[in-house]
Image (tube, rainbow, N blue to C red; front, side, top):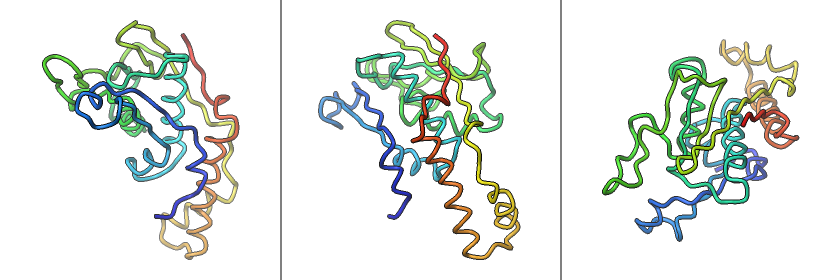
Length: 198
């Protein structure tokens, strides 16, 4: 499988998953997520998927500091409805990493390890809020990639690609320029694109 190699340079997210520990899925329940894995689950790499990854990465860093985040012990609240804009795309990425779901998640074993009802929409938060279940500590996170401008060639190329009039060379160039912006978002001072309110 070939993919842009910068995917491998993105900081990974490591969590402890108590359910995985109990069921013998991962040794000591330690699970690691890479940007490549998130891209595979999402089906594509774009500024939204990259932003959802970064939002989760920095929210967990702030919530847990030097401790390892606990998968399945994190609530997530969105200001927007699930169906609005790219909210669903972002929610899917966050679910993949944290395990939090609205209704579809695991119901638990003997009252433990439940993953459902940990994600809510249309809540009174600015954008996205992450809360530790054990301490009730909350951080709100805003992602703004506007400072990472797209290449001026992208708009006319996109029009050609979407209309089916692009040549193979133009389609290839469009994809390369698209991922070039994603690379900048993920690797050129990504923390500057994230605002955290405690």
